[in-house]
Image (tube, rainbow, N blue to C red; front, side):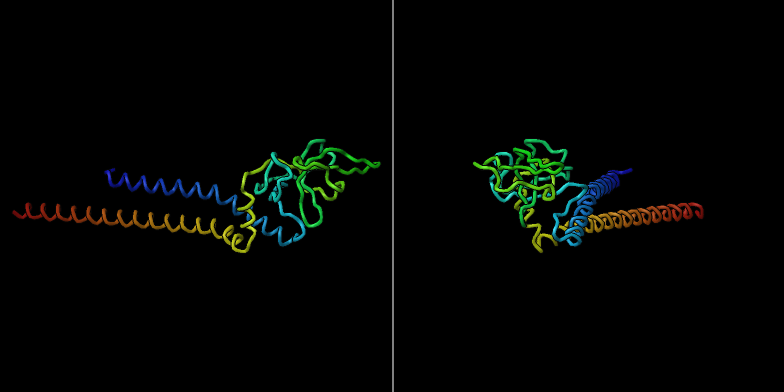
Length: 211
């Protein structure tokens, strides 16, 4: 293999690696995107989740320093009887979702409620939380991703959320095809040059034979 061929092979291999990386990254993103969008249409009054996990945007500083306004928190669906004191839970309060810490349990026979409070608040929340209000248990946060997530909930953001992975796949496919076509064209060119060389050698041998 000559130097030019080696360089072309390296470029082709690099494009292949990039393609594999894009597929590994973007395929899960597309699956999650379509799942969340589908669930948001089917269950408009519920927060869409994926594999039992739900994202929530923090709008206030009531839980500082655990997490701050503008953060994105991830909660996991959990059975109410598995929760303990000091756990942080997300629960519905009217049209909003609040993420506060459990400071007390209130039990009445077989049913119970949670008394919650924001870490940065001076008093506990006004009303106890019923089991039916529970959205999940806080798992972790992603700093400052909430504002970006709010943008992604707009029509433009939703369109980009779907379009960007698709465009990435499309650009990769175009690049892959272009590289393949150039490689094929170069191989054809090399083959034609080799044929001309052989024809020239045959003509030379033919002249020697006649002489």
